[in-house]
Image 1 (tube, rainbow, N blue to C red):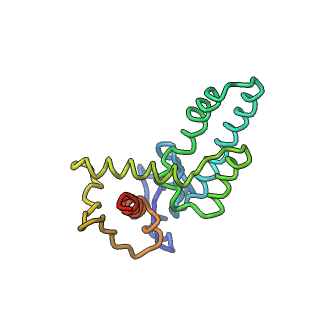
Image 2 (cartoon, rainbow, N blue to C red; image 1 turned 90 degrees about the vertical axis):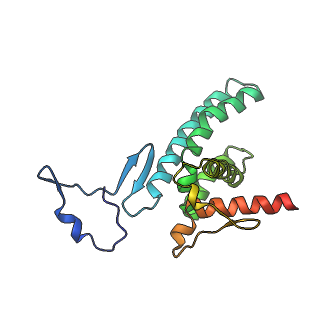
Length: 181
């Protein structure tokens, strides 16, 4: 897949590998996450939604056996949450409001009292903390410490503002403010 933010694809009509032209696709799956050629997350959100619906159907069948509360929580933590949380730091911030409501609607219909925004913020905070402490990580240099907060990276596009590093800086800075209060 050729990822390009240009409005024309004329340049890529003539790319060949072993004398065969490169096939143009709308999206592809890489390490379990679907990417589209325009870097939107519609396909991935639909894929996660379908997987979650399957898991909730299995959970509804599981409830017929009248499991204990501990068994229900174990089922949710091992079967449902991994589907939702896989690479969520990467794509959830850039998902549209409609896609987010579609995903959270599944949890509300099943009467789960889950704060997905907190769940995602916690996941992003843990991952960013790992990047900050690992000096050899490629994203370590993106976290520049000011006097009391991390300095927000310069952004020219809304797409970058919704990406992982700026969101993680916002979350880390809000944590610092919460601790000060």
